Image (cartoon, rainbow, N blue to C red; front, side, top):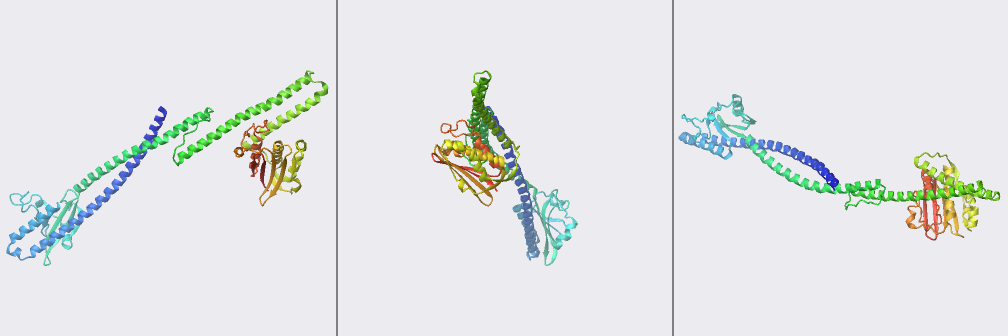
Length: 492
């Protein structure tokens, strides 16, 4: 349990850091991009607004200066101008003033209110402003609209708009509107940082919850996989990893892992059965051989019967030799150390000659062998000795498992690329549940149903291995208490 918790904690911390870093970097990228866009857009909008207000003030000033009222009541006209400047400044929050054609401020928002005016009725703020000479010609010929400090007028950059005042085509000065964007941008930045901080915090909370459940879902199956590997390492293949109800790679891994465990369990059971069978098969003939040899040596077996028992000893030695050769051949094939001599061989003739070797057994069981009279020459490119072993093993099985008075049928066929031969025998057949496993190493059909209790389960595995390395195939068909058919396909 402690290990599972530590693994889950490690998974949680790793994934939490990864997802958190991704979220924070994403938010930072989006935030910086958005702030840059916002700052640029805000500056452009403010510049347009200052330009529009500057034009409006210039138009109103031109109208007042060009009216008859200003000539009849100059003081009233000036007061109107001052009032317009003050109202515009208050409503927009911009720095608004009117300059003469020399660049000196003559009217500002404080002219009427008296705010920041000295005893000489001069504004302490705007009286210090003198528009640089470089701007005078520019504003006279069309106006100025830019983002600058207006020379040394301001400490920070402002959105500056300067519009000339013309009355009857006579230049009288210009209107100035200046807006500081620093305070507005800072306020926007604060709001944006707050918004992004709250969003990031919410995202991190959601990530924490998601990662917690996700890592738990991953850690539990991995812990089960770890438990399974420990069991398999100790030789216990009974444990199965609980499957998860998803359709992703982890669920597929668990399913394949359990399938592998089933296969390993089956191989282990087959191996144990094989070892037991081989041990028994080795022990029985060696005991027989040892007993007969000792009997001959100590005189228990009389000289007249010694040849009889020596023939039995020779038969047992041949059986041992065959068993050892089978295992050696399988080992060579599996390790890729087998030497093959590929040549053109005639399959029909090999079938005939092989079954002739079983004539005595066929006669003893009264088996009818059919099909030889219809065989036509069929050729394949293969190792002759190996194919002899394939045909011999299949023929041996056919004779062994055919019922008394049964029938064996041999067929051959060919197509453009392959040659075929099939051996069919009557008898008990192979149960359907065993058909898919019949070619597996060490596998044996239920011995309670089999007449070949001495089999080690390697014959058909060896046959299939030989056919596979030739690029061919072998298939089996069977119906219980009816027939069994093995079909071999070899390249021409």
